[in-house]
Length: 400
View: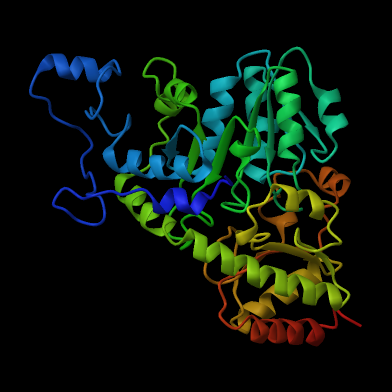
């Protein structure tokens, strides 16, 4: 039977403390015990259903983690105060001095900066490769490699990782395949394709309202227990704990994710096809011209489409900035970083979300300064949106 991630979320049933249809929010930083022995056992991780301190865990965080694990089809999950909190915890839990990571060259700028600039001080090295070429990935593996890291759909170039192929490589070399699935929730289920760990920035599509930051790591019970260990767990000791109020808010929004992703994808495909037909250099996984279009189709849960992210290249940063400013003036969206909002967001990643990557490396990977990254919104009348965007493009003479 095919895995249906939205059904897994739908089938979860929680009752609040007083019978509410939403679970009660645990608004406490610390918890009391009837007996000292129970406190000791809880601290040692030997009791279920008891809480000691909210940096360790809280009912609200566990509710959200359980729902996200169900969505990704993993044994369990741990939530964080940010997506970077999730990413850094996984990398530091798995890697120590002398270890090595093989990473996609096109990843979120913060992740790139962490691997390129921060962890070398702990003598952890990273090789950045073209993740779409499995032979290049395998050639980069060394005896000290511990992790293959990639994004399902890469930020910002929308390259597609062959999760099954990478999982086979990871298994062959006894490595952990860690996949950031922020751009393609529901559309792709990496754990079902062989990934060991699945990460999301909850800030984006999953929360969907651009009012909080958060992250999650989905994986085996054993790995999540390692992250939570009071003695040497990166999640526990780095302290990137999600607030219970925010967990409750994200959990409510998660329940409409399937509807939102369908609309994001519908609108994204419509605009991508129109932009490409206009002669704009357009990248979107749903276009037959995308080099990994067929690969995406083999991995996707078809009812959620190809996602809400697309890029166009208008030739120069000056034209990109002018177009984004005009579109914002016309109320077509916001000139802003991030993604997954109900309104369209657009930015020039070379000077924003990927600015941590040096210019020469941006050019090498094909990230031009005229590239605009769109997070397509939930517009009810996408035809009207397209016509208005097209008018902006014509007004600025970006199209001949």
